[in-house]
Image 1 (cartoon, helix red, strand yellow):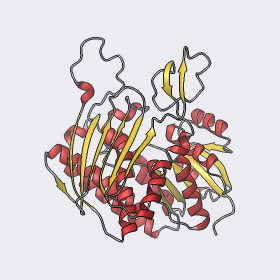
Image 2 (cartoon, rainbow, N blue to C red):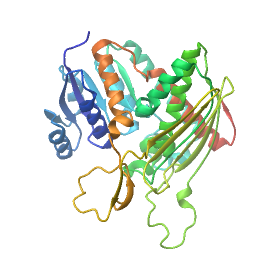
Image 3 (tube, rainbow, N blue to C red):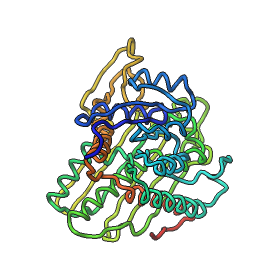
Image 4 (cartoon, rainbow, N blue to C red):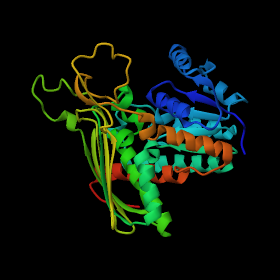
Length: 391
């Protein structure tokens, strides 16, 4: 049994931190103490602290890591900081929650690396980072938690339960995550996210499929791995448009892709098709189809129709959460309901807290995070080199 109360420090104050803290508050059952919000911008950190009832703020990550009361550090920062922040915390004996993606290639902060550095070189350097992190995880007394919320999404976990019971064989999966741009201005540059829509959006769908194949493999007593990856990527938001036709576009890629199409072939012959794009109007859409030998799943994570609204105007709705990058609140809309539960933020936080308290395993171990990012960068290589990448 772990500590009676788990003391948490959160790094960041953006959308990821917002989703995580709502997950904590809805997880229930395990006492937590929200102690510190850590960010360089003290004013925004204080606003986040006050809104979610943390005890204090700090502007130094070193200070947060050195706090003997902190048990668990939740990092919601740009991916280029994930591995250095994880390593520092783990070496200090802290447990860490790392947002997806676990890492990527970010160069030395120079511009345009997505167009000037080969994806093969990126693969090699990223793999070295993963090897270093794996060594630190194995040596640390702290725990590493990988926050891929879609794995814990309620439809995905129910599908996993059914797969374990029926021991069905997954033959084919396809899915799409589409959205209109990004909430982050940094999303247009490879140096910030280690890629474009594949790293921010498509990775959710890919991760879910890879997770379900592992659920299947464990249920059937088989070893199933990704055999090969093929991909095509581009910048569809730069398709020539006439004056006035770009008024709804919010994707502004520089050296990153805003559309990707990835095909995975598994060692058992099954296949997956993943599409991610930044250039589709209509709000966040996340759909996954799973075809088995004896059944089929259709998952609508967002948008779903739990609550449909028709608003003549948006008076008084400025502070009401409607959904992720949704269109205007007027007219017909599918409003996000219990989004932190349905999309898995509550489930993942509950799983991590239970692991801290009781030592139970999570659904997203380091090995899954490791395999996912290697597949993503194999896809980048495939798109650049115009060939299938064997793993």
